[in-house]
Structure formats: structure tokens, C-alpha cells
Image (cartoon, helix red, strand yellow):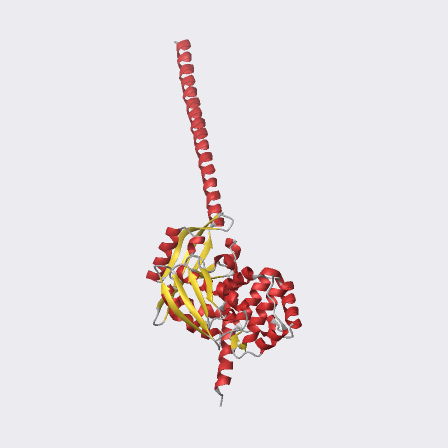
Length: 186
Length: 200
């Protein structure tokens, strides 16, 4: 029979294991994550968040989302998450510690506690910098391609026009030649 | 100047009744490593050895386990002496602690308003310490302050300074504004209890 001390010891060990597991999972993910309370106060961030934003935990934990998100956006996303439970692919921008702006899509999920309701929300940020750079390059390439096509079309028109003119002239020459011949014979 | 302690005080503190959760040593460790690296941690552990109360932060500190309450104070004193931390730095250390405390994370769902924090303050204390009693006394959201009293714990003034930073940070998380904590009454100044006023 296990006494109370034994039970407490086992429970303590279980909680420690669970804590390590959660920490490892939270630290492992390469996606920047943070957990905020319903007021938008940041309560936890993972190492990927620190790396992406330049804010360390001392800077950001205990501060409001507005530290790195535009106030209106932060409020809208948080309210929508709390109301709907899940927000996917919401485009926004986050301001890094060095003031640079990072385009991101936000995925957010509310966290509920039985009998207490929503007690916060997980937010993850997908960095769109590379995607936007690639989109910009594709757009630029398309623009260059369009210009080339237009140029080719112009050349094509000119070339075809010249060819047609040549044919017309040849026909005209032939007609004149025939006319000249008839005149000589007549 | 770093905090000082006599051998007599160390003995008294080591024999004090009561326990504290290991989570406090985890947050101490984190502060030391983040600010002074592993070298800083070694210095603190050396200091604790010199104080004849050796402690290995990496091996021994377990969030949920209980440790003699005296170690809480001696850890702070050793940090202050080894890293030459004065009052302001100690308060800063206290204000960083709730950000990384597993125990505080359990309570974060209540950090929605000063009222909620006030309601849960005593419970939060009891989750960390088996001695002492934290009682909310007064709060005004209009005048933006709250007062709480801490009874039956009289170890060393370093804990008071640390707690000033700690309470400031917890309330800041609830009100979303900068806070300032003052200890208006203190056992070490001849009062019957500690009284903290936090303004925002």
C-alpha cells in the first residue's frame, strides 16, 4: 500500500516529467509560438520566437502583444480567436526588436479550461519574408517576360508587314512586267 | 554593496522552520546563467560552499520538490555576494522570476484583473512556501494600488527586496501597466508583519 508521501512523490515526479516533455516540445518546434492571456499579455514564448523577433523572454514575457504587433491587428486577432476558437492564415506584420518589420501569417487557437472558459490563446507566426520575396521576383520576371513578348509582337508585326509589302511589290512588278511585255508585242 | 550575512544569521536561517518549492531555485539558476553564464553559476555555488550550505542548482533544483526555507534566503545572499548585486539588481531579479516560474504559470489564468490576483494571492504564496501567510488588505482600481501583508516569515531583508520585484511583476501581468512596489512595513524594521503596497 502506497502512503500519502509516496503518492505525492510519484505525482511530483510525474509533473516534472510532464513539464520537461512540454518544454522540449515547445522548444523543439521551429515555428515561432507564444501564449497570451485574454488581455493579450504574453505569458510564454518559445526559442523560435526569440530567434525570429530578436526579443528575448525578459523583453517580452509580461508585456502586451502590442509590443511587437500593431494594436488594432493584435486586438482583432485576439478577439476573433477568443470568439471563434481558431484563426487561420490571418495576414499581419510583426515588429522585430531591431525595428524591422516582418510580414507573417498568424495561426491562433484559444485555450479553454473546463468550467472556467477561455484562459488564453496560442499564436504561431509563419514568416512570409521569403514567400513575399519570391512573389516579388516572380512578379518582376513576369513583368520582364511581358515586356519581351510585347517587343517580339512589335518586331513580328514589323516583319510580317515588311513581308506582305514585299509580296505586294513583287506582284506589282510582275503585273508591270506583263504589261510591258504586252506593250512590246502589241 | 552586496548583502551581508553573519555566521550566526546563517545558522539561524538554516534552522528556520518551513519549506519552499524548488521552482525558486530554478528561477535563481536561470537568472544567474542568463546574466553571468555558467561561470556565474560556479561562483554562486562556491559562495554557498563557503557559507557551509552547498547547493548544486543543476542537479538539485526540482520545480515541485520542497527544500528548507533557509536555502531560499541563502541562495539570494550567495547570488548577491558572488555577483556583487545590490538592492536594485535583486529587485530586478525578483521581477524576472515570475516570467519563468512554472508555479506562476499555473496561476496565470487568474492574471486578468487586479481583483483576481488579489483573490488568489494567498493561494499562490501557499503553493510556494509552507510557512508565512500572504493576505490581501486593500485594493482600489480607481486609485490604482493594492496592499498585501505577509505574516510569520522573518528571515532576512534580502527576501523583502526580492519580493518587492516579484510582486511588482505579478501585478504588472494583471494590470498591463508599469508597477512600483514599496514595503511600507517590515519585520526587520520592528513591525509585526511585512506590508507591501503596489501602485500602477
